[in-house]
Length: 258
Ligand code: NDP
Ligand code: 8X3
Image 1 (spheres, rainbow, N blue to C red):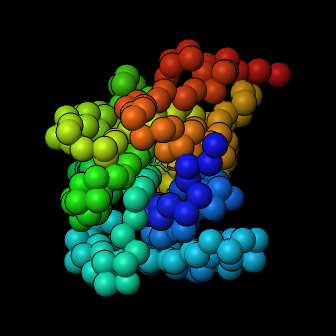
Image 2: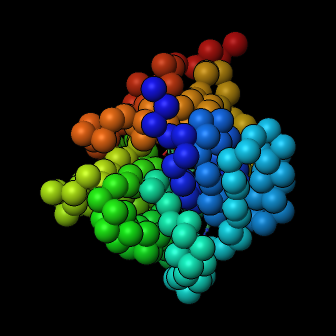
């Protein structure tokens, strides 16, 4: 049964990777989309492509999730045009480098925390009240295996994903008595632009991350998110850990070295 058809879904980080795959997956199931990211050209391209393949409306918003004013302006537009979403996918996120905490560049602390935690909080705070008012809605947060186990050089990224996990559970307890749900989706290695961003455009280093094993694809995670959102309203899948079969945790990974 398709319970996604006709729902309005706002996805952050829709210009690449998991967010872009979510846009495709929700659009294929008949959802109206509000797509958010900084790179407007990419969003426009995706909108054009999706609009050719189906009737469900697609709107784009070129903004930085770290900027509350930009978020508030978007929400005003959504409210005034009666387009407040029933589903929020807090997916925008990043990591910088793999340095030890005592050697890392403190500027990256702000960038990663502001995007992964504060951006998610701003969007949630701005959009959740209308879900509570309507007594219907779903907040889906992109956590990570990195929010369950720390690894060397993961430090600040690990901390942000532990925070995402805590905030998902905090959101759920605050929402008790409503029909609004919150979920964290925690993937292992997914082949996207994530490592390219992590290693600041070093393609060779980024490619090495996924060499010799079968990582998840962004569409695998998008499918899982659609499954969680499609569950009947009385079913709240609060967390989902989704790993490549070749990776059992951050340390145990099969690699075909030949
Ligand atoms: P990508 O780098 O492929 O995509 C990241 C997306 O986030 C892009 O669309 C980017 O768009 C957007 N983004 C980044 N910063 C901002 C910002 N300040 N404002 C608005 N949008 C922003 O990475 P993934 O798709 O892999 O990552 C998506 C989420 O999944 C992240 O939260 C990540 O932590 C999580 N995750 C990823 C895993 C992986 O192995 N890839 C595993 C587990 C979790 P733009 O640059 O245009 O703004
Ligand atoms: C991304 C996966 O293992 O690089 O969240 O932290 S990992």
